[in-house]
Amino acid sequence: MKVLIVGGGGREHAIAWKLAQSPKVPELVCVPGNAGIAEVARCVGGDAEDVESVKALAREERPGLVVIGPEVPLAKGMTDELEALGIPVFGPNKKCAQLEASKSFTKAFLARHGIPTAKYREYTDISALKSDIGVFGYPMVLKADGLAAGKGVVLAADAAEAESAINEMMGAKVFGSAGDTVVVEECLKGVEASVLCFVDGSAIVPMESAQDYKRIGDRDEGPNTGGMGTYSPSLVFTPELEAQIKDRILTPTFEGFKKDDLDFRGVLFIGLMITDEGPKVIEFNNRFGDPEAQSVLRRLDTDLLDIFMAATRDRLAEQEIAWSDERAVCVVMASGGYPESYEKGKIINGLSDVDEGIVVFHAGTKFGENGEVLTSGGRVLGVTATGKTHEEAKAKAYANVEKIDFQGAYYRRDIGVVYG
Image (cartoon, rainbow, N blue to C red; front, side):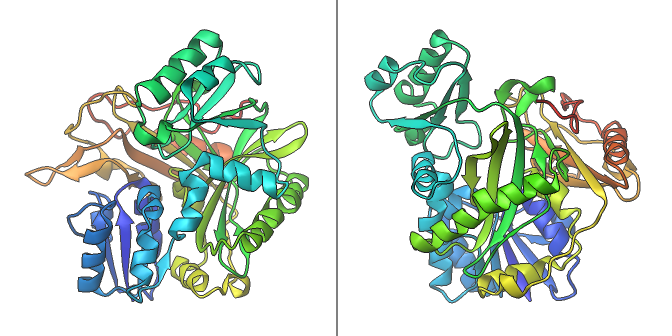
């Protein structure tokens, strides 16, 4: 079967790497891909967010399955358009994609179905929002309602920081139309964790747990990023907590999809805060997390194509899914200056020097004129290791990070440490 993957980041490299292991996938095509994906797939030029161009490519390639990695094409309705061509798609339709594309949509869904989450209010008027500064105390959590590449959340320590964030989101429109509506939430206290679930009309099936690190600096300091690293399984998960997540979050979410006529097929990423009152939902995403996919898919033993095809046919409930007992740790190497301004085009050295068994997932990379691998984004690489213990996987990941270098390379040194 030919499979077309839409996207060109670390998440898509992890998906391509796993699909390439399937004996049922003779050909992988990726738009636009990157230098790492090119090792396992045929990369074609194009824009992953351009629905019409991807449709044209699909007509030409006639894949047996399309896997959509990023959130933007999902929000634009790419799944709907491709399914109209008769092509199976792994990724939710436009209606379901609102669960990530609109914070207010998700908060209303959670409230309607009694799913634990933070108290919230939403605002479309800047003056009304400013008059409610500190409504839930401090830190004040402000979220741009729409898609903002994982950066549209501010935790304001005081009124001055809150007003500055409001002016940027709703006044200066630093996130564009995503800031037309701003959601304000109470700040939940606890430990963050992530649960990724395969979902179709027959079942919601949680994958192995993971924990990611959003802030740029060690000890979770500095601005939010798209993710600086992750590990799986989460050290905070216990059988009791997993049972709570299933009963309080997964089951009512799946039932809510049915009640609200949300025909979800794909991955539901659930960001959680493990509080003293139990797990509460921070956010929903409509796709594999990045870099959660890099650590979770390293531990998947089942053929990923079988899972994808079962979901497109509403047969997940019949699909067995097995996981390795090994632990995985992924450390992101980023361009200096990220998540603010950064330079591109830096030569990456040492990729061939990593130890056997280490997988370096490419995110922001491209080929240079002479075939060298260059940086082309903020998050550049995800150095991913597995081990019998968490500490072994962590040590192996960092030992191999040290073997890779590019000008301005930056990474956190505490991936795998639990804070909270």
